[in-house]
Length: 518
Image (tube, rainbow, N blue to C red; front, side, top):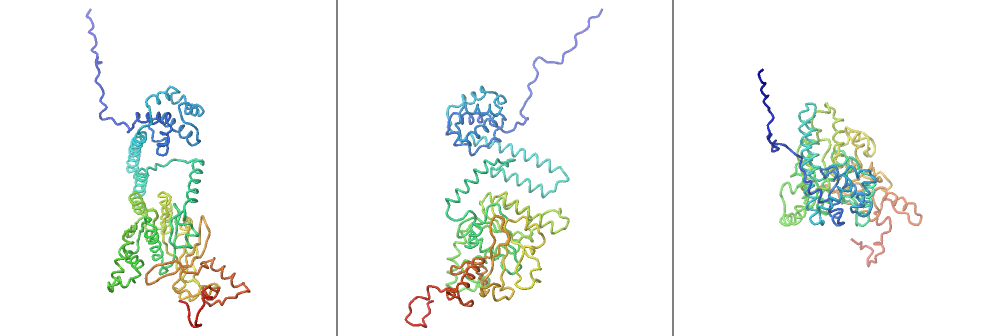
């Protein structure tokens, strides 16, 4: 009987080693995570140095995330942080066994002897987290790019938004607890209480700043008016006040006028030289000197002007993010909303829906960058057909009611002089020449008012109106009415403020009755 030959074995005694050279492992620094957590449990100074720059998501290992969360909770409650307290907190939350028990915590503290260089180690952990976040976002962008139903403009905006969040180190959290928000709000209130001035960005107009306490972060402010009322003049005056007087970075997006035209108007306002003289260059010698001297403050101002025509909301958001990142801008002005495009063709030609999309995105941009966004807007022709004083109303906002809904403040610029109205429609009987009114018609977080301003037409700017201390708008009217009802002194309604209210200048001694002070 023939012997059967043994079958050949294909299993080798020494199998080849699988190479991991081409394999990919997410960026991580587990050794440093161990060192940082151990240092936080053995040295309080270590906690103080990194507790505000780390959060649980930056740790790669889940167990490390849970340990850091326990340390963070103890810190918020003002409790001691050490091996025993962290163990007790994890046991209370039923996580101690999940992370490996007390033995795992003991190992963390045994691998470090002090909190030296803990901040440097924490920064490396954050860098690894940023790398992982970039990989995650890139994969999402690639996946969305293969989806034919994805709108390309939405994709661009989403991608840039996510990258901007990483640049700012503000990876979004899903929720924030009420406790954290209350602590943050109390800090802000304390800062405002200890800070002289206002909580927001000052406009440079005294009465307006008193009403709003400055333009507030994350607010969308609409300034609307009919053509010729001075929307651009007002916004330029405000941008100049903020950038020149307060040295606060401002971004001005002009869809109507070129950047050279805008800066020429600003030069006119700053130097008190008329725009006509600057256009023709017909200046006297002393005016050239005046130009060279007074323009220096404007040259140093942190004002950034973009005059891209037909700017889409997506391009605006992209440019704004870059300006916020590179130049730390604190205010955005858009002149004006109806000249913007939504990008893409999602609105199907419906202009009202397109404007609604633009206003929603402007509000979203204000929240994302946490700065006020001011958008100028046109009013409908209904103002012109209205009889009487032709004062604007909220219903006059052109093309979309969504503007009123999205905005935190809706205001109007109104100049009766434009309509050949000689006197204000009130008990004041004062001339309207060289005056305008800033009407706050909606204010989500404050009161309403009608604020009188001075309009300097040949220089294209607005200024505070010298009201001799009697206020403007509602305050002015109430003071006038109170004085009119005072039987001890009935003012002449057509007299100047000094004459009507008995200015102390009238009591000055004079050698001659014909001598008039000033």
